[in-house]
Amino acid sequence: MSRWKAALFGFGKIGAGLAEDPVHGLAYPYATHAQVLRDHPSFDWVGVIDPDPNARRLASDGWGVPEIVGTVRELPSLASIDVAVIATPPDSRLAIVDAMPNLKAVLVEKPLAETMGAAEDFLNHCAARDVAVAVSLPRRYDTSLRELANGGLMRRIGQPMAVFATYGNGLSNNGTHLIDLVRLLLGEIVSVQAVAGSTSFVEGPIPGDVNLPFVCTLESRIGVMVHPLRFSCYREVSLDIWGQIGRLQILNESLRLIFTPRGRSRILTDAAEILHDSPNVETLTVGRALYAVYDNLAGIMRGESSFCPGADALAAMRIVDAVHRSSEAGGIAITCNQ
Image (cartoon, one colour):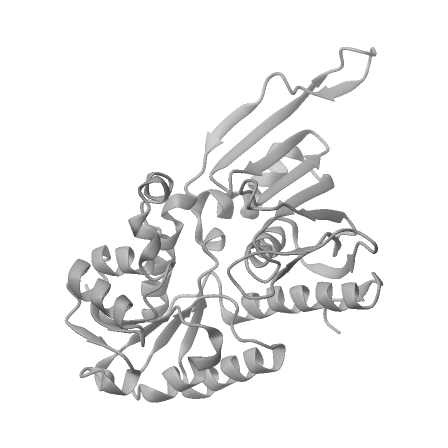
């Protein structure tokens, strides 16, 4: 089996820090890039690049990475790196790509860049270099959710009729994950509209990231009602889909699925109801989805397709941008491709 040399840029929470949380580890056996790079047979993890000396100390003490440096130009194996895993803030990503002459692929965290224009420049630059781009939106790689996207949702609940969703910790942060999950399971979002006059708040790891309610209109003309929750109270990114023959809820940040079938109504003859006292609760596999990201990355290196190419991340960014513009304009509907 081929082993590609990989360097990890950024050794913060998603780089390695979440592995220190024992509770998180119960739900997410692979919570960080460091855990996957350590274990995955397709990659030879040769370097960590982080300007923070504390992060470099953690990489040295806990992970045994051979090359740990503060800047990309200091990396001894720079010329032989095949894959760059970029978990840094988005402003430095073009420089990272440019520094590695034989780079074949990048795996990047969202958002791709600070602005739509910069994100397009990044993707165009990678394409010109013939560098494949994969984006770490892990739900897109999860086997359970991919099965729902490939016909499983319709088989369980029929045609969706109404959809409700929640998110928190920032529209650009977890709102991006929710928007991408909607696109994966329900189809393209063609327009958005912020809820005028509603309460919004700033909360999350991205400075100034706002949380606000909005409505998405799908290509199928179904509306998705989205409302933020304060993660300071509790965490949730959820999707609640009412279909013609059942209801499906994706809860606990995609760790649980509840399917509730349709049955005979207890109120009227020749009518039906959703049997809420007979739910089917399932555990999803999203806790291992980050490992699946690297399975797909290895496939990309062998010429296979990406489950989450840059175009999908760009589409999610475009929708987030449209929600912001709708809010700033007092809640008017914004077409997402404008």
